Amino acid sequence: MTAGAQAAVTLQGVNTSFGSNHVLRDISLTVAQGERVVICGPSGSGKSTMIRCINGLERYQSGHITVDGIALTRDATSLKRIRRDVGMVFQSFNLFPHLTVLENCVLAPMSVRGMKRAEAKALAMDYLGRVKIPEQARKYPNQLSGGQQQRVAIARALCMQPRVMLFDEPTSALDPEMVREVLDTMVELAGSGMTMLCVTHEMGFARQVADRVIFMDGGEIVEQGAPDTLFAAPKTERLQRFLAQIL
Ligand code: ADP
Ligand code: MG
Image 1 (cartoon, protein in one colour):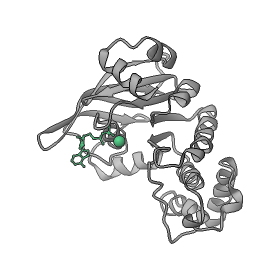
Image 2 (image 1 turned 60 degrees about the vertical axis):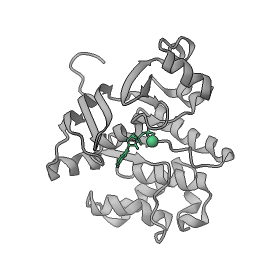
Image 3 (image 1 turned 90 degrees about the vertical axis):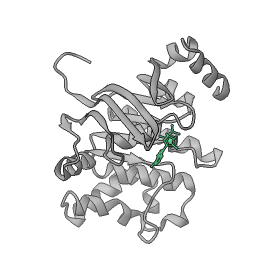
């Protein structure tokens, strides 16, 4: 990152425990504006917890997090500002089943950003076009395939015009033939300059778009680097073992 440029996301010495389970151990990380970071690591290594900390879905016991220069505290105002600026896409699409695709997309822009319905609709149709499903706008989530639902979830998050997008295993719940269409959407988003943090084990995607891959294990960042370097020459035995399992 060039000197003076404000980081999109910073974590400094973040620790999280659930009871006696110390899940994040002194995590420090700086993500530059426009940077694309892929996070991988074995199940239970703390990836989701870290991602959830960044938009205040999970509390942490010590350390500091900032998003777009705003300190994340337990104060309701800072939480609200940060959640407005951070889009999140989960493994399970979490669409509102009783609302149409379009209504799913206009809800938050209208209620949180105070957008007028007509403006929110125009924006939603624009994003549904970008994720290539504008023709599904009037349908309900259960009338769509998993891949289409996940693309709606991405469009819905983008409708809030976030500064940062967080993805937590967005393709893990999909049938194999639908993984590609969701990854294609994410590749396109990466090309638009969006700051992205993606937990995924799709290493082809990591190679294609990631500026940096972070490998977590046991609540720590064990190794990080450019995808080609990291995959070709893992330094630790832990990463070697992990790559042997997934590649
Ligand atoms: P990953 O996403 O890498 O699989 P998680 O961040 O989901 O890992 O979980 C890390 C550890 O924290 C696991 O041991 C998990 O059981 C525990 N954990 C996660 N969320 C909670 C929670 N809400 N309450 C208690 N334990 C949790
Ligand atoms: Mg997880």
